[in-house]
Amino acid sequence: MQTGSSNSKRNILKIIVLFVTSFTTVFSFSTQIAAAASSRLVFVTADCDANTMSTIESLAALPNIDGLGIAISWYNIEKQPGKYSWTVLDGAIRAAAKHKKYVTLYLVTTPKPPDWLIEGGKAQTFACGNFTRGVVIDAVPWDRVYLNAYTQFLQAAALHFKSLNMTPYIFAVGMVAPQRDCTITGSMNGRLGTVAYNRASYLLACKQMVDTYARLFPTARQFVPAPGGEMICRPTRDPEFFAELMTYAINKHKQGCWMFSRDLSSAGSRNAAQFTTFNQRTGIAYQVPSSTPEEASPTNFARAINIGLANGALYFEISPAVAVNGDGLVQQAINLIHRN
Image (tube, rainbow, N blue to C red):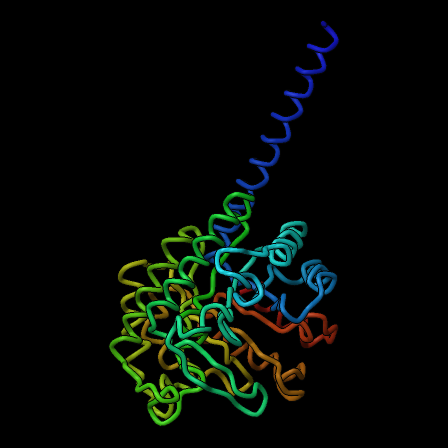
């Protein structure tokens, strides 16, 4: 009896030690993330829909980056309403945590919402497409059924991360709904297929999603996306739209909302002029795409980074191809971010 009692006490002690160690590690990492909010950071994009877990693991292990910009489609997580498959996303976050890296989450609605949401006319939709994607049926971005379903998905995600104690590793969450950029993909001539563009409804939907992200991920920064190509609903540029949205976000949620643009290149960013209005009030985050060989070149990458630094950016998200490029000019540019 005494031996059994001693073993039981030792097991309890081990559990307490493991709990305290785990709590201390997470608390320490949370403190690092809070401090990082005022530092300049380099993340690398890790697309869970396109990359294997071994690739994501190797990106997380890179010594010259601070975190992973993890993107995964809502379509691949919730194939049936209310039934979620978190395995791939969990693996990517754990890979980052293993190497003491931060995470920016993009729980994207593209290239389309889940089939069950648009089948049978549940959500109002429109047909859009291009030469690379073909015709895609997308949800009208201010449709209430679509926004409510995505909000429920975000709630499930937030609870899931909290239950696994993953929340402390999340540096930022990208606002990808109602649209990944403020620009409505597939809009033409002021219409979404047969649906007329409604500015008031769209702006209201964007503001409501700002509040939703802030409520569900209160300890993470929220990246509020600027329009691609300076447009909202093609061909309408409407520069006041993003200004109104950002004013609302900062006034209500302060520096928890950062400006985010996915178009930083060697030519700069088309959103730089809009960002100057707010750059003293909150953070600036850029994604540096390398979709062409010219933009992936070390010279143009370094030029893009210098432009971003001059604009006051605190966060740079680079492509995997650039992140693993051992060219001296690329490494100098990354080191320059960390030195500033």
